[in-house]
Every structure is written in C-alpha cells, then in structure tokens.
Length: 161
Image (cartoon, rainbow, N blue to C red; front, side, top):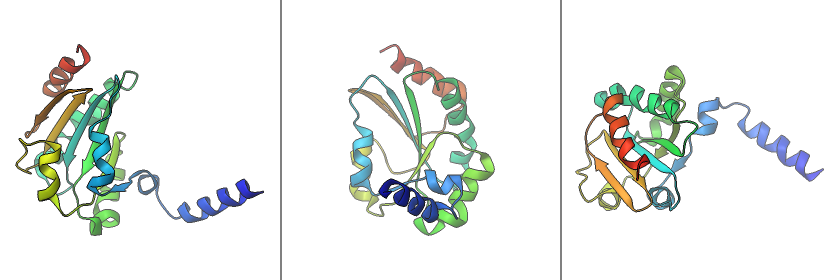
C-alpha cells in the first residue's frame, strides 16, 4: 500500500510538468562536481552552453549527432545549461522541447562562477561554448565551438585511449 501511495504522490507532483521539466535537474556546483570526475571506462563529453548564446545554439546539433552516433557505446554526452534559473520554465524548457534535445541536459545554477570555473578547467576564461571531454584521468578542455566532424575527431582520441 505504501508503494502505491508514494507512486500516486509522485505522479500528482509531476502530472503538470512536461517531459523536459521532469528530466532537467538543477544542480549547484557542489552537486555537479562529482560528474566531472567519474572513474570508469566511459568517455564523458560535457558541453557548457546557454539558450542566449548564439554559437552555443549553433553547435548543439553536433552534440546531438554525437550522442546519437555513440548511443550504444561507452560515451555519454551532457549538455550543461548556464541559463538563469528564473528562465527555467520560460526559456530553457521550451527550447529543449522545440528542438527535441535527446542528450542529457542539466541546469547548473550556481552564481558563484568565479569560484568554480577553475575547478572545471584552469584554462577556462568562463566564455561559452566550452566543452570538457574526459575518460578516467585523460582530460581535454576546449573553449570553442565544434562541428560534428571536429567533435568526432576529438572524441576518437579518447575512445582509442
């Protein structure tokens, strides 16, 4: 009986939310940081972007294609939105739904960016788009836009590792 009650409560709490709203968690940097240091045989491609960043939006199809091309491999693409939390419902969720993004999307809601940018990469000025690719202790940070051919080439270095 308790499981049924819990399920009904969760269903009622999420019934008014779109699928995108249910699947876009919000993290502060302390909660997000472990996602930058997983020690396993999976390659992680973490792209920092925002809906208001034109070069970010232009490169998103490359990351979506990358995600699709490697969905049956040990490659995980994560799109880390740096949009403002106040735009979660009005901009971020509609953006994700309109473009039918299939990659994992999270919202990094931590205004203390000066305290965490260096923890992502000491090379990062804070500009976006920016991408971190890592597998185990092998890491590479890129403060630039990518085409699908460019990101596939970089990923290949990690898959062969």
